[in-house]
Amino acid sequence: MTTTDVTTETSSVTAPAQQQGLVIFAVSGDLDKIWPTLILASTGAASGMPTTVFFSFWSLFALVREDVRRTGDNWMQKMVSMMNRGGTRHLKLSKMNFAGAGPRMMRKLAKQHKAPLPGDLLELARELDVRLVPCQMTMDLLGLHKEDLIDGVEEPAGAATALQATQGATTLFI
Amino acid sequence: MSTKTPTVLDLKGLACPLPIAKTAMAMKQLAAGERVEAFTTDRGSLADFPAWCASTGNRIVEQDETGGVYRFLIEKMDKR
Image (cartoon, rainbow over all chains, first blue to last red; front, side, top):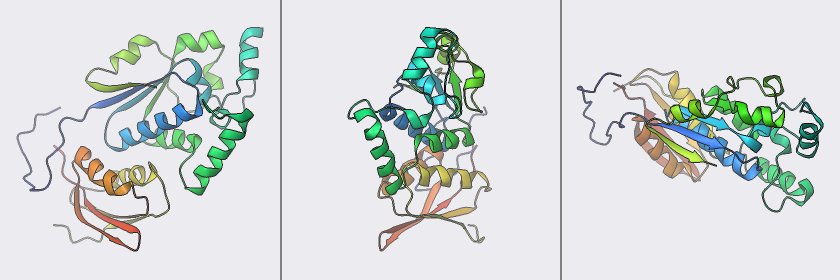
């Protein structure tokens, strides 16, 4: 954009440098990784950073619609979806999962502390114009289709798209 | 200096990242010079509001605490 030749002189504030973008490569499908990913993404966008989250591998299941129970085109992919139900409400903890009791307790604690749940954060991220880009190759691999995913997700893309967004941006791999 | 009454945001009880996210959304609706008055109870706000203002270029005009409620009066700056 235009270079700044007009500097508003306010004693306490220095105008921020040209706002950097934020790109997060989300690969984990663990609740305790998706959660901070979405917190950082929505905060980045709220701070004026153009933010992109590139979802690959297990993280894709966090984008699966709640009303889609089974995904996959062949028995292997169907098996994956049976054992790894999609949707943010079915994410597992990387430790102390205790067959789902762990995540349930986390949700309870989050509600007590009025901390937003991953599902709320996904909604917030979309409201703040965070780009949610699913990885085409791993979607094919796992038998996921665009219609299995929640609204507001961009067209599936590849590594080149993800890397292009990293130009001059802060990148995180979670 | 703006004389308009600030937009009041009741963010009490909310946890990270909601106070900042909601403030950012409210700020988007404002013109430069207009203000937001945010009330929070999240202790993280104490560090987060100044940090958010530093990265967005907005200005904290007033900040105080009354009985565990933090108040931030923030002015939207003209961005060039």
